[in-house]
Image (cartoon, one colour):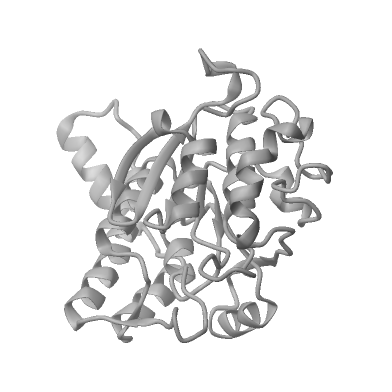
Amino acid sequence: MIHKGAKHTLLERPWFIVVALAGLIGGAVLITSFIRATDTTLSLCSTAKTTAQSIAEYTATPIQLQSIVHYATSRTVPQQTFAEISISLEVLKDRLPCNFLVFGLGRDSLMWASLNPGGTTVFMEEDPEWIQAVLKDAPSLRAHHVQYRTQLSQADHLLATYRSEPKCLPANAFPIRDNEKCPLALTSLPDEFYDTEWDLIMVDAPKGYFATAPGRMAAIFSSAVMARNRKGAGTTHVFLHDVDRKVEKAYANEFLCKKYRVKSAGRLWHFEIPNAANMSDQPGDRFC
């Protein structure tokens, strides 16, 4: 996720990547029109006619139109690569409209919201000034401020000792809303965070490149806990960015589990996590 600061300024990319990204969003608009043509019992000719009518009648959402114009007219593009974005897009195409939780707010947030038309896309961000800056240009985005209880410098210690706290164990960590005893649990967040069953979770924040930064330990842990406690049908898709870094990789292997990793591209890993009732051969004190 892109934030202000010298090390993480928005990247300047060649013009053809900007055009490709605009095309990606434009393609998503067209894809949603196909998804709305659901009458599969008609004949081939009738189905083709229905699909053509659906495309002609489909109206892009305002946020999709805003997103297309933004990325088509700007050389500032998301930090994730086209290949990384495409992994998430494939799942969104299959699950939309869905509940999509994104850790981090940035110039790519407008893109993520536009790729989930009719769904709920919510962003969690630790920097209140950055929230104001982004929402000034994209006021339709839904963003909440998060206060983390961890620092990156604690990552190794927390990973080595979390099993000594019973409330951090898989069977006891949920609900995380009031789990103050586990330092990796995200507490005191808006009700929407806890009350929504998230279909997709993108972990691309908070900052994790200096010692006093929050690090992504709690976001990864809490994503794993929420996925395991899913009540609805299906699995939870978790996408973790910056897996080239030590902490992200270690926490992914500990809580999201190698056996649930289904795809990868560049610095992004994609996990498909079943709920606890559909897990097997798993020790009671470990996530993996």
